[in-house]
Image 1: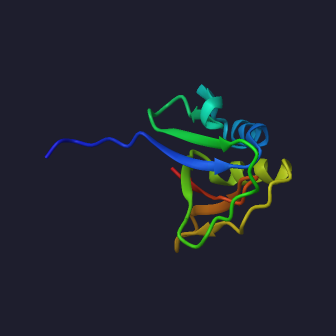
Image 2: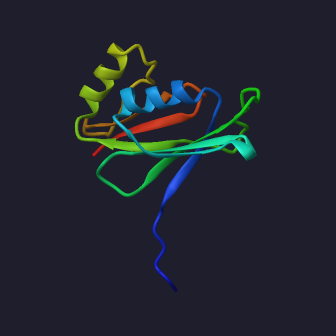
Length: 126
């Protein structure tokens, strides 16, 4: 069997600029490239972390109502070197965070935030 490598995850967004600002400010991602396809009424923006090749694709479809997330989506996850500092920074930014979860030995493990469209994002201790 060939070796497969993950390339990107796509999220549909209602307000493209607001979503870009969120992912840049809150998670430190940067726009890698964007593609506007007016004849098909959509724009794609790819964001990366500058470390891995994996990208987050934000898809904006012109002139549509906000999306319903449904019940099938779970979350995307990011690791961070210092989870407690990350949690404090997000709270300072006014981002609503779930309670920090810890391992049995008291090591911080994870917490969740939501992006502007309501997609859940898990932050994990490296």
